[in-house]
Structures are given as C-alpha cells and as structure tokens.
Length: 143
Image 1 (cartoon, helix red, strand yellow):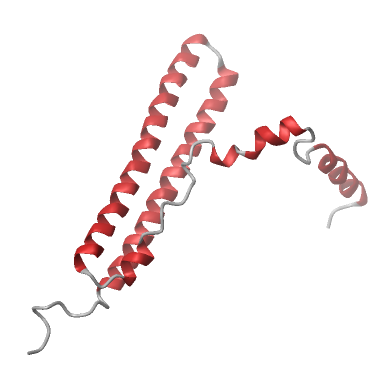
Image 2 (tube, one colour; image 1 turned 90 degrees about the horizontal axis):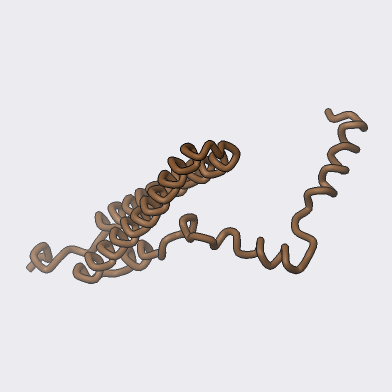
C-alpha cells in the first residue's frame, strides 16, 4: 500500500502531466494517432466474405484482404528504410540523443508490423472456418 507521502507525490506529478493546455497544443496532439495510419485497422472485409455465398465474390474479397495486408506491410517497410537511413546519418554525425528517439520509432514499427500480421492471421482463420460452412457448390448438389 502506498504511503501518504507517495500518494501526495503522485498527485503533484499528475497535475504536471495532464496533457496539452493551450489550443495550439491540443490541436497538434489531436492527430497523433493518425500521423501515419500504421496502427489503423484494415477494412473489415472478412465479415462480408463470410456472409457472401457467391464463390467469385468471396475470392475477390479474399484477394482484396490480402492486397490490403501487403500494402500495409509495404508502407511499414518504406518507413523502416527511411528510419535506418536516418540512423546511419545520425550515427555518423555522433548525434546520439536523437538517435535514441529514432531507434524507439523503429521499435514501434516492429510492433505495428506484428499487429498487422496478427490481424491478417485472425481474418484468414475466420475465412477458413467460414468456408467450411459454405453451401455446396453446383457440382456437389444432389441430383
């Protein structure tokens, strides 16, 4: 359990770090999450694929899902290349304080990539389980 002294220190610190106060600060921090779109969820095609009974439509939607996934990975790779180029330049200049920040950004990209892969695997698994519950095709229908 925290002591009274610790609780008072926590309250003082909380007052110092309660977010931006000015309109300019609020405006600039408002879009932090939308800066690059790496953490954005991809379009939810999987539910539409599951509901679709048309084989061609399902195949097209699966293709769109895969293309969206690889486009997202490509954007992450492009950003990673820019970061690694910047890391080399900062290392050559001896600017180690900024280098730390850039390396943190590279670590964040790795997390975005992991999330994108996990999301793609979940959607693919959802598609696989739904395709096993499909209506029989024209060749499989009893005569």
